[in-house]
Length: 261
Ligand SMILES: [Ca+2]
Ligand SMILES: [Ca+2]
Image (cartoon, rainbow, N blue to C red):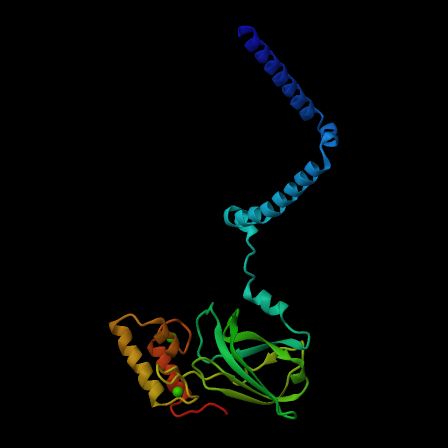
């Protein structure tokens, strides 16, 4: 009994030693080991390797997006960059300058205007809304802006309408817009006083309604803090406040004055 057991133990020992040696040889000689593997096993290992790679790659990318450095996430381009990139080939970038009567302070935010251009021969119209203009350094009343104008309106006789946020509309007749030339509209300043009424907005006329609403805001400004909407609606000199200066500008423009149609 003892002898039999000891024989079995001996053969087990021999087998396990042999296995250990074989495994260690395979580990040290991977190229020879690969040659010894049956082709089915090799194919299986290859497939598993590919699968792991393809499954892991998207997972690694997703993890990097959430945990990696901020630079990995594509950053939003500034608006102006996008606008210039998207300028179609048949458009021209036209720079214009405009005069807002009564502006005295430095206005970093700029002011927005609406523009309509009509080709007098073809009859075609084009409209631009909320075009941002920026104050020119050293000239508080002069603001500069750009429009991406279809080339069909260049070198033609056009009518040009311009309206400021709280200003009467101006009409510039028989203009010719030339690419590369600044369109100077400062000879007819935009007159302030057509305030944005809470219900009806502006109507291209300076009336009692504009004056009364501005007056009510002047009174309210002494009692409470005005809302941003209230200030924007009637801030005729863009200084961020409703003061008696805004009322003076409205009166100077003239009660009953209408914008040019
Ligand atoms: Ca009005
Ligand atoms: Ca003001």
